[in-house]
Image 1 (cartoon, rainbow, N blue to C red):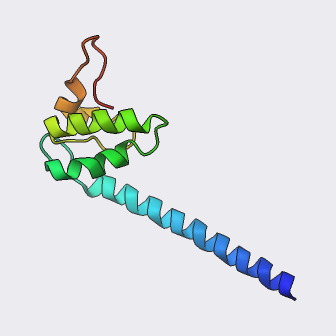
Image 2 (cartoon, one colour; image 1 turned 120 degrees about the horizontal axis):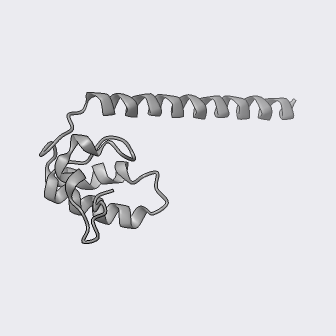
Length: 105
């Protein structure tokens, strides 16, 4: 009887965790669609949070955060999503390194 109860509790816990992840994903997708992106769409104090979002799925988190915050402080913009979408923020997109590569992640 106790084994059955443990299995039921584990199943309920697993279902709860999956449902929570689905709701969080839907919520973040809604935020991307409803938020205004573009030049000067942020205040400087919003940069760390936006860069945390932008860099959350990279394996190079520290350099991504460093350059993202540098770009955000200059451009006051961070593109939506985790990668790409730089066209909505021309300053972020067009800032290049000395070698001509993109400076902003």
